Image (cartoon, rainbow, N blue to C red; front, side, top):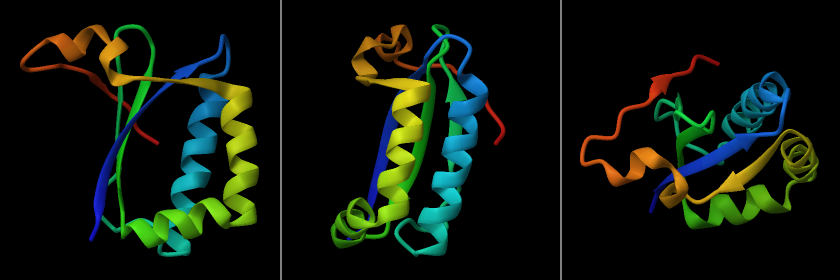
Length: 106
């Protein structure tokens, strides 16, 4: 069974470009290894600068396989250099019924 994921990344100062490059590479890798579906990736920016990504794992098993993949683990290092992960509840927009975000293009 597939699983839709929403994750918020808060870029470290001056690191948004590196974060977007890491996201781009992550999408390429995960799709090439068929860990995520062909469902369109959504990227948006919150008012506080956080980048929110929405994607779909093909299955729980594909997620586990991805986390065991050496290239994916290496990408985790790129993410940790470029951003902090944050709970969606910390976004001001999360308290709104119709949360609005700025679209981001990869």
